[in-house]
Every structure is written in structure tokens, then in C-alpha cells.
Amino acid sequence: MSVAVVLFTSDLRLHDNPSLRAALAAADEVIPLFVRDRRIEELGFAVPNRRAFLADCLRDLDAGLRERGGRLVVRSGEVAEEVCRVAAGTGARDVYVAGGVSGHALRREGRLRGALESQGRRLHVHDAVVTAVAPGAVTPAGSGTDHYAVFTPYFRRWSRERIRDPLDAPRTVPVPRDVGSEALPSRAEVSGVSEGLAEGGERAARRRLTAWRRTGLARYEDRHDDLAGDATSRLSPHLHFGTLSPAELVHRARAAGGPGADAFVRQLCWRDFHHQVLAARPSAARTDYRTRHDRWRTGATAAAEIEAWKAGRTGYPVVDAAMRQLRHEGWMHNRGRLLTASFLVKTLYVDWRVGARHFLDLLVDGDIANNQLNWQWVAGTGTDSRPHRVLNPVVQGKRYDPDGGYVRRWVPELRGIEGGAVHEPWRARGRGAERARYDYPEPLVELSEALARFKHARGRD
Image (cartoon, rainbow, N blue to C red):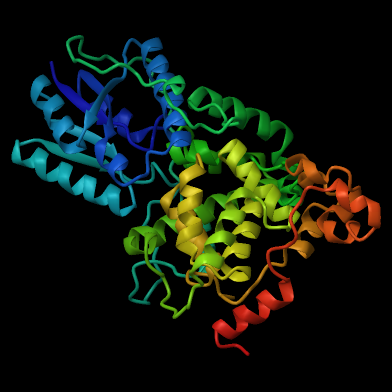
């Protein structure tokens, strides 16, 4: 009786899982294994929102496996050690895993390969599981570089690539009876979870996908920046944990067709773009992708402004609304992410790493590739071809929340201000007695002064 191990990482699903299907094809029995990685905790990445969502995902994965005659085996510790222990205890010769792109994932894969080979075992790494197109699968022709540094040419090339056909979920998953497992984690065990955190797991993901394809996909191109309309897919947490397959999403969107589907596929391509950048430059998770000489503000005043930004008390309503959504849901609208990031790095002129760390502390979809490289894009240290762009929070608020519904949802102090006037509460305060109605701070900084400071700091007087 042959046995194989399939190590689940960022692919916590049964549908379209090449690693799982390869293991089932190669062996009589498989061990679906998840290792609670001790190094993730040491790196400070195991924050409450992602731990709670992960617990949902693992419980759902275990339930799906049990419906197919199997179960999930959970261990804790150093991944290579735990996988080797399970393989040695069951006589498994082969281990299957989805390829990752972060520095941590690549180091984990290297340690695992070395440990298995020292025991005479084999590691099989499957690409295009976490992404629709594998990082490194497309590179600029004749340029001598290993990745695309600009999105548009990458998108053109990516769009011509054949996306592999999605795989059905297996009907049965035979698992050896005598493999020990820890108890499954539970969301209830995690403290400090955002009150509005979404439900995790493949079944929740597929319900969300089905509903959104029916009601939201066709309107996505026109409404994805509508802050109050909340018209995005909200599938990013499921992509991060792999409860949905990006390859399947591309196929299903293209099958639906239309401008909304095209716009959604473009966003999936942005995700692949960032993954291929990080795979080629793992240091971009910590250091500037494009070397600049920013003189980021530090000191007591900057520290106080950072805390006001985190708390959603900057005095700029659309920024504060987005930051409060982040704290309440562990998620933020994509337009809100751009606005809040621009405000921190361009208006307050604070190091992008400060904002990226705060987002990673709260975001359930806190993905190293997308989070860090989006922050660098906004900061002008990444792949943006217009590094000096500054987003004005008042102008952006009026454009993407014209009636003020998003602001009033998350900043209740301002609910008494009707319409788009909510984006400039200081004007309402000038009406004598009405001033006392609003328990809301004055703006941290005048936008014109901040813009002048930014241009001077960047040497663009």
C-alpha cells in the first residue's frame, strides 16, 4: 500500500488543487497535512484576524475531506521536521506541495527539499496553484531580466498565456487510519479578532463567488471604485488562503464575458504581477524595489500623526472611514487602501513600511506580495511609472463617495452632515452653533502645506 503526503499551505481547498490530485494519482493513500508553522509566529505574521480565518479554513477543509472518507492531519512546529516525521512514520516516499513566492515560502521549500532528500524521499512542487500563471513563466523577451517591472506589458503577455484547466474536487480521499493529529484550531480560541471579520473556508468562498458572479461581476467595471456601493468581490481573503483557485476565477470570469469580467480578470493579473515581482526580488518585502533617497519623517510629531492615522482620526473623513473599516472588518475597500496609503506616505511623508506593517497586523488578506508591493507602488519606490502622484483625500472622497454614504457608515460623528459636504466637515463647523455637534478632529495637516513638503523632500521644488 503506497502512501503520499500532500502538504497544504496557501491552497486550502479541494477544488482545483493540483498538489492533492497528483498525490491521489500517485499513491493508494494520502495524508492531507497542515503544519502550523512555528516560524510564521516568530515572524509576527500569525495575527488574530488571519489566525481566526485560518481556523475556519482548516475546519472546513477537514469537513470536506471527511465527506470524501478522509480527514485533515494537523501538526505544529517547524515544517520540514513535521513533514519528515509524518513521512517516516507512514513510509511515504513522496510529498506534494504548492509553490510559493515569498522569501519565507522559498526558504521553507528549500529546507523541506533538503530534509526529505536526506531521507531518500522526494518533494514535488506544483506551480500555478497560488497564482493563475506561475511566477517566472512569462519574462520580457530578449531583455535579459527575470521578471516584468511594468504592469501593462506584463498584462499583454499574461493575457496570451494559456491558463490551465481547473480540476474537479476528488470524490474520495483515502487516508491511513493510524496517523495522529492535533485538534483542529477554532476561531473562538483567538482573541483580538475584528468584530466584522468574514467567514473563512472553501464552502463560504464558493457561496460568495456564486452570489457575486450573479449580482456583481457584470457591474464590476463601472462600480469597483464605488466606496459606498461596496461592489468589489471581497474574494481577496479566499485568494490569500487558497480557498479559491485564481485559475478557476479567470476561467469563470472569461466564460461570463463582458466589460465587468474583463476588469476583474485584470485585477487577478495585478495579483499575479506582484507575485512574479516578489518571486524575482524577495527583498522587496522589506526594502525599496527602486532605490530612492527618501528622508521619511520621524520623531514625536510624526509618531502622533501615525497613531491618529491608525485610529481613523486624521480629520480627513474618507481616510478615517477606510481606517475604521479596516479595524472593524479586517478588510478594506481597494480604493480605500490607495487613499489611506497615499495619505500616510505622501501627505504625512511617513515610511511605507510603517503602513505596510499596520495593514499586515489587521488585514485578513494580508498577503506579502500584494500588500508590500502595493504600498511600494503608492510610495513611489515600487513599480509605479508615476512615483510622484499624490491622491488628494477631499477630491478622491467626492469622486468615489459623492453622496458621503461610505463616510457616514464608518464615521458616525459626521452623520449629521448631508451629502458630499461630509468630506469637508470644517466648513460645516464654521456655522456657529453647529460646531458643537461634531466630535471630530481638525485636519492633521493642510493639504497644500503637505504637498509642498513632499515636493521639497523629493527634490521637486
